[in-house]
Length: 398
Image (cartoon, rainbow, N blue to C red):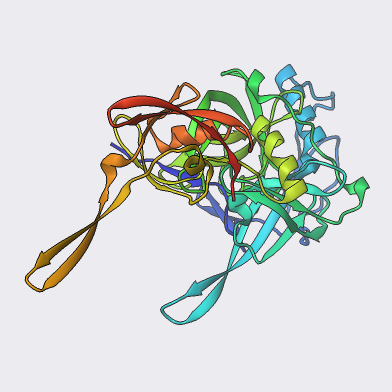
């Protein structure tokens, strides 16, 4: 059975990307943008011509000058790209990676995508695109390069916000849609910079909804993720997922692949998550989440066994109990020995919060992520064989 890896689709800079191709045994060289290909000159006789030989006649080929006829699907795709492609930016990063063996450091370069979301220069992208970056450059549709300044980041949702000082007339923000109204089978479009190929446009359908993926932050998961079959490759991370009206309905985030390249299974963060997180990042640089003051738990078949509480935290103030440290002394001759051990049987076992079962750490955080600091929730715990309801007023996450 093949094992599939979940890969964040942020690619490294490629340098010389596609230099040669092979077709029919001949080598084809792709000229750079500054090069003009040299073609044999020939008189025009009503259509394209081809040179057969030095002394041969010129062969004329028929040419249809009627306007192109596009299908309805093609017209929709063309319209979406024309309206939205200028909002997509190329993000290039540099970070320093220490080499502890040689006591040196190396410069690592990365590349991803981002989306203009307002006329003030805010750019939304994936956290993993810009994580630990020492230098961030943002390239607009016209090739202009701006320094990207970090505004805020949220590893729990893999979202980050940058800001550039660009003229408002060069910024073309996208309109947000509503990810709760998406349907499996719906046509979607992706724009990004796979392998450094700027503003590449691909199309597909929504393959599934409400997927759950691991987040860059431990013990967290990305929820309600959109699965698509549109081609997504390294460098697409942070680019928009669009509907047929050109509304942004998600942000391309990861692929499932055995090779690191597109296998028809891509994932996007839903736009409603982005719309909830981004305003907080712009205002305060981080997302303020509710916290119950439970530092560590053990997962069991019946629920979460409390292993450590934050001193003075919400759970401790409410009376929830963690394990007890038991100190024992024993005398042996003239000597007295003291030993300690942890009595986990005294700890509360969390089985539900506000009536929702808690079987895992992911369940615990999923429930608390829906709450706000200062809100009152009810923990149902098992203590000494009896079920108890313990009200807890949540703190803000430190």
